[in-house]
Amino acid sequence: MGIAFNGEAEAKPDIIRDFAASNNLNFPVGAASREAVIAYLGISIMERFVVPQIVILDRNGVIRAQSEFMGSSELQDETYLRHFLGELLDEPTRAAARR
Image (cartoon, rainbow, N blue to C red; front, side):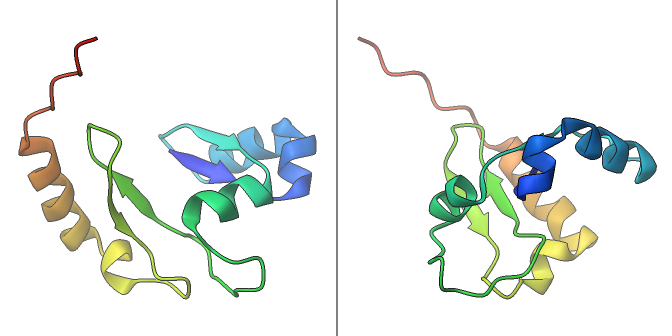
């Protein structure tokens, strides 16, 4: 999933659809406020960071990998990602907690 987090994308959802179509993206792309994304990523508003910021969640919603603020080459390497994601997909799903 991709998240656009600039004011223009939030205000004009067609921009996101056009970007996804023109770049042949085959995954969902949504929008969130810059503040929400920065808070989720744990980045200070004073911190410089690059895009894409990559966060990998496992089947249970646990963050298993996250880019450094200035990028992480391994999280942009297809061979590494295929292996890493394959290992995550092989892990069993944790049972939901009973109430």
